[in-house]
Length: 331
Image (cartoon, rainbow, N blue to C red; front, side, top):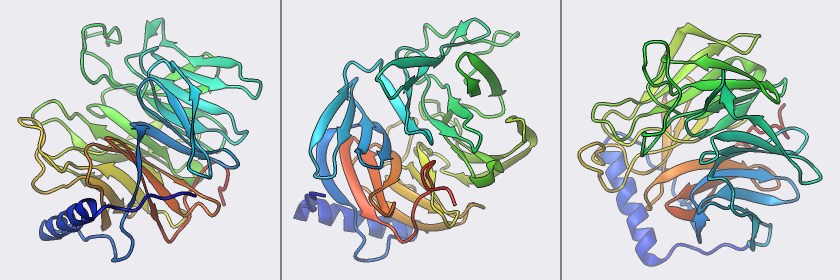
């Protein structure tokens, strides 16, 4: 894999942020493991690794593939405003098409199957991120960031619903989170389908949620609302975005900011980077990334020990000690 190493300015910025993070009680990443800048390539969101094909990510209304040599290829353009990506165990690409307000699957022959484009006749807001369980059921978040004028998903009281949904088969969609969180973003189903982690990130509302929650996941694919547990709180900073888990059960969560976004998000305590948490929410370490906004992460490489990070259109990578969990390598 071709790697472009940090410039002196980027390295200095990384070291400064690590010092700032440490002063706020966030332990820095161990020395020698600084993230590597792989370049600006419209890497806005949705990184996911495919064995044999390399890394896929989204940005600029495009799905891009970066092969093992570091060369990028346009996989799909336009992409319907693609955001979160996922490969199922059969190697089919699942796409949250935010602008098209649907979730699709790309079949081996290139055909596109619409998995979900409405719930009870109402179009989704902007499908954002997704996860998959051991039975192949797909879970996706449906927040609305930015302009909210064309939201059509409301409850019986007229409140906008920014929910989480489960897809059992094409067109078979159930809502499993309605108002249990504020604005769901990143999702993760834990091994054994025990828990559903939900990144709750209402980042353009003063006092909005900036929290990572965990729910017990029942065998039928619904959550137990009473099991809701706070895992980590970014307080008044930029909250959690995409997340993944390694085979030791530790969480890797994109979040924080290097420069504040007043009046909604501060950058004093929680700097931009990847927050490595235990499954119970203990902060184990912090991987600083000197570009805003740090949006998502994915494990990849031949041994699944490379963590890819999307941030402000740039792509970063860093080596980690434990391989990541994916549909391809579940224990």
